[in-house]
Amino acid sequence: MSSSRLEVLNLCSNRIEHFDLDVLRTFPGLKELLLQRNKIVRIAGSVYLPALVTLHAKQNLLSELNLTGCNCSSLLSVYASQNKLSNFPLLGDTVSGLQVLDLNYNQLTACNATELKKQPNLSTLLISNNALKSFSIENNET
Image (tube, rainbow, N blue to C red):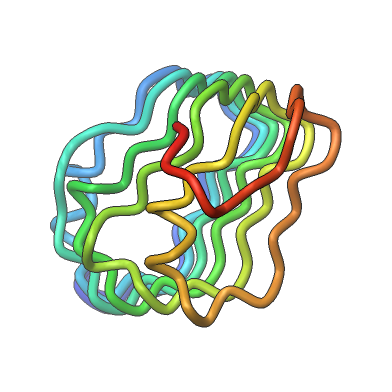
């Protein structure tokens, strides 16, 4: 199998601390990226992944999740529960079809109305066990 045909990349349960999206350039057909149960503190970089449907990044040490450098127009599900997120994820302008966003068990204090409004197909927002003091999508708090 050539690397360009890779559809699922499972890097679960390792000791990865930093994940650079650039490494995925070799896999443009990637549909599922599994990064859970690592020690990832940061996901950075930029990459064109038009087929990526699911990102699993739960049970890491993420303090932020910034996907603005990831051109992932097919992304439907982001699982980022059980991290250390204190700011609402930045999904970028190419991610607009998200259906599931799991942010349970983080340290979020507010929702980002701007980011939520970019997701008209969002059907499931999981945001329990955070540090929210209020919930509103009518303002632009971050």
